[in-house]
Image 1 (cartoon, rainbow, N blue to C red):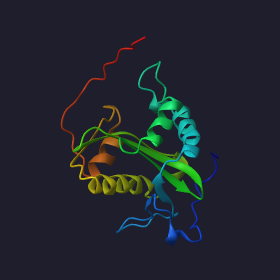
Image 2 (spheres, rainbow, N blue to C red):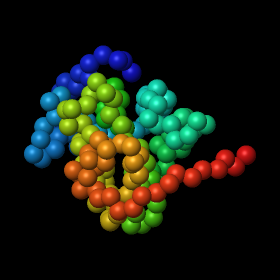
Image 3 (spheres, rainbow, N blue to C red):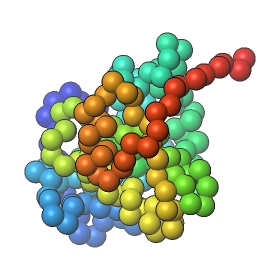
Amino acid sequence: MTNGPASCKEKPGLETRPANTFITSLPNRTPTMPAIVRNATPTDTGAIFRMGSEEEVFGVSPRIRFYERQELDEWVASPQDNLLLVLDCEGEVRGFLFCKLMSSHWAYLDNFYVHPAARGHGYGKLLIQALLDLLRERKIAYLSTLVAEHDPYLSRYFESGGLAVEKTYWWLERFVE
């Protein structure tokens, strides 16, 4: 991953995209720099791990900074239980989304991230739309997520996408060692 601008120029042949590519633009909004959302592959987990490890926001506690690299590999290997999507800009992962399929009707959006240099171009909406399309295909009726109480920006972002605040929870943890 580079720290430079998020250049996402149209790739030649994008119209004949691979089967695991889900979405390239939104119906009423075209991102200013085209990208694709696709299933993560084993070669993407390093970039996802780096992004998550570099951002303090992913830390849920002092001992848990981000997912373990092995967890990312497990999720890619188990698409029947997990949706790990990446935002691909010219072959570079510039964002990701992880959703756990909890049951036949419920999915939990566990993580959602767009690199700061790629924000403001509609990529987050692209990731969310791809997720919603996949959940509809699987006939999953309910999507939930948790947002930190002190993050009003993310709360408003998800609310603008149709999610509604229902309850407030406390994060409780225990390490089983």
